[in-house]
Length: 460
Image: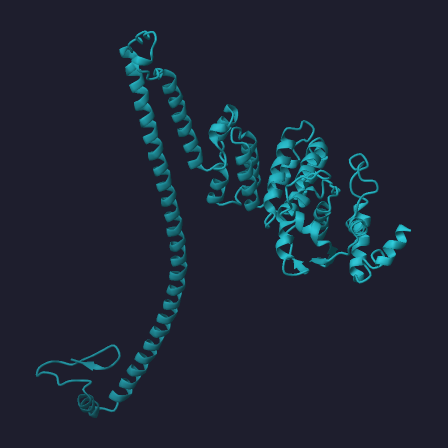
């Protein structure tokens, strides 16, 4: 009787009658994939596993309404109910205000599957989480601005994600590595922040595991420098008082990128490490590490010396009694013992040493910067000299070639002139008159003998 009533309303038979064939195929594939995720042990509350289509159909039967909005993601089409979606999803609430049919473009790494899993939470249903989709669901939830308000029937999606991480992922190193590797696919996009956080958390879990081994470090070493920088920044914020693990990661990364990073990239990565947050053995390793920038090592050593002397100063600093007015005293306080001359001199010596170390540190840092600038200038000069030498060599060869041609031309012209003079003077006396007429041979002074040159031409 109840089913006949629903059929009279035209709800059951017409909910999806106008959907495209590709949407039908999508829901079928989604139903098949969702039924395969999760293990019976952690999915005991979902029997059988919920799919987005089944949830939408159940909502339609319960509320007596059809899906009234369409959300297109990649090549998929989702027909959803507006009320539950905009109640939980801030992103869709903004975009569905003026239109009931929208297309959204997901950030790098997010897929339509991740979108559908997040939408399931909008219908107050548990999301089937796995190590493979954990990071993407978390990133999609943050990007879609899913509400953090818990309900009586279903907790906030982030609560489910946190519970799953601690109960299912952190207890098994294989799952932890699987989550860590899935995070890398989300790096570099708008939704990378949650993925970087999950990556850092997985690193912390694996570093504290006795069965995880060291193979996971290779996943860290394979990161591009921009992604490694983001991970280092995240770990710096997460572990302000203990940077041993961060130092191990940075050192392993530099070891696997020897000669591939610029000095600026190495320095930026190293300065995420707070040297005062290192254990003594790792600090000693740091100051002897040839892979680290020299300026970073020198500054670490100077800061360590400055902090040591500062601690000594605080240790010898006399305790100052609080200022209390005599009227507030019921009983007079005993007079504090006078400071000895030795204590005063020791305090002054520590102050002078601290000031000297501070000045030395500043001077050393300035000198290192100057040396780096000079080194960069020398490199530029050598590069320009090399370019100039190559250019000069090419120009010299060209000039030699041109001069050779010019010399050969002049020699040819001189040969022709000599031959012409020879023929001209062989004609006799008229030759001299003709030469004088042309201005080639002048009149010789009286008594001056004429001489014949090696070419046969008479000269004075």
